[in-house]
Amino acid sequence: MENFENRDTIAAIATPLGEGGVGIVRISGPESRDIGERIFSSAKEAFSGLKPYVLHHGWIFDNSNRILDEVLMSYMPGPASYTGEDVVEINCHGGPAVLQSILQLVLALGVRAANAGEFTLRGFLNNRLDLTQAESVAEMISAQSESGINIAGSKLQGDLQVLVQRLRERLERLRSELTAELDFPEDETDTLGNEDLGARLEEVKKEVLLLLENYDKYSCWRDGALAVLTGRVNAGKSSLLNALLGHSRAIVTSIPGTTRDYLEEKINLGGLPLRLIDTAGWREARDAIEKVGLEKLQELIQDSQLVCLVFDLSIDEPGELKDLALKLGSDKVLGVGNKADLAFAPEHFGRWLSDHGFEWVALSAKSGKGMDDLHRALGQRLVGNSSEPAQGELVPNIRQRDLLLKTRQELDSLQAELGEDLPFDILEMRLQQICNLLGEITGDISSDDILERIFSRFCIGK
Ligand SMILES: Nc1nc2c(ncn2[C@@H]2O[C@H](COP(=O)(O)OP(=O)(O)OP(=O)(O)O)[C@@H](O)[C@H]2O)c(=O)[nH]1
Ligand SMILES: [Mg+2]
Image (cartoon, rainbow, N blue to C red; front, side, top):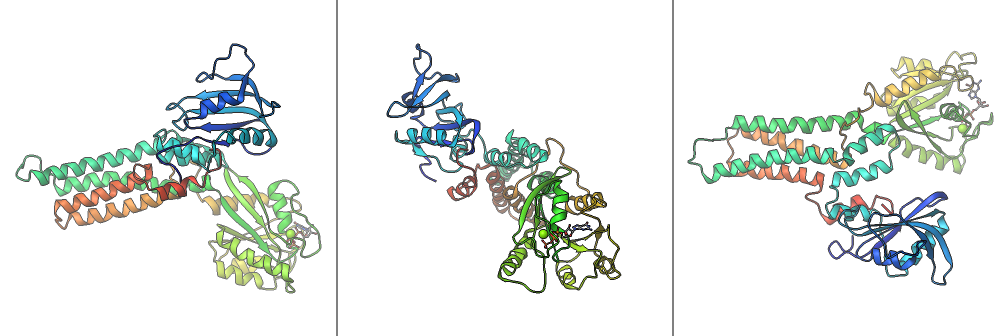
């Protein structure tokens, strides 16, 4: 990350590159107002410069006085702006060429192209938002479901920051009481007993445990799940994908080996964002393409929460699926017996699955019969009995969760040590460590490395 201290002026296209009604070029930094005024010709004759928080209607011309676009320009002086610096936003038409031309014009005036997440990073560095809020901006942008929006929204409002800060303050208070005891040991009136200390740590731990619990219960509603459809050629994997999607996405033919590559689609399964992957089917004779496909399949299986073993109920299963089922175990496997509209073969794979403790459903991708059972089974296996998070529920992201896990561990050890009559200065040091962990969540304590890692995952222009 460059120029943490001495900040230059940066610019980027803040809207996605494609055709749309409007597109936005954003400029932030000390030069932004000046740059904005230099490239802008107001439609009003009385224009006397960019006024704060007013939309100015006008035109942008290039260096050879050619019209680039008709725009609305706004100026938001710092510190009351997204970045905390002077910001100019140019609302132009949302075409990639228009946006690029305006950006190039701005860059030609000595402005630097912004890095990914740099506007939000500046907002963070200027205390416009804390780290949990900054992260929730990215979460909001990538939200795939209503739950995803709710979860990001609570954090964007600062609810997680406030909670974590409160916990930290409680521990800081405890720490200063310990320090006072250290400094004035003879003062007997207010002695902090181990019991009291233990109880107060327990209160903090309870809140930490609640957040961790929420992660386990609800993060799938935000992050979604991945399910892979695999099985022998012609079992009807692609037909099943199409049936789940509700439209014909994958090519279906009676020729074994129709699907050669893997195909990913998203569905919304009762509020849960679910990525479904249709893969090439298995058969004995494999050419090079299918071998590559199989390697890819291993990776996908590893990343997935659930593997749907799709089989044809009308034929006897030769056995290959058994090895995979045993290897993956019943937690990861859901059997899907397709073509239930045909007569069942005597040794279909469902029998074996039942005998070995695997769950399976019978359906027909063709007629749609049994699809409800599949929906139910998928929901049950992927989210169990957890319901969607209620509005306002706080759900940490994976980074915050890691820090909360460490916090819980430290609280556990500290509680265990209380019985050992450790000297107060050691206890105090331990408390300081816990406070630091909580401080890392909100970004009160952070390193350039951590910030780089977080903000580089943002999109350019945010
Ligand atoms: N009767 C019946 N036929 C089905 C059903 N589902 C799929 N089929 C037929 O089975 C054949 C194979 O279907 P696909 O969906 O292409 O099967 P696949 O598993 O994707 O096959 P590969 O991509 O070759 O591995 C096609 O002729 C489908 O029309 C079903 O529920 N009932
Ligand atoms: Mg297929």
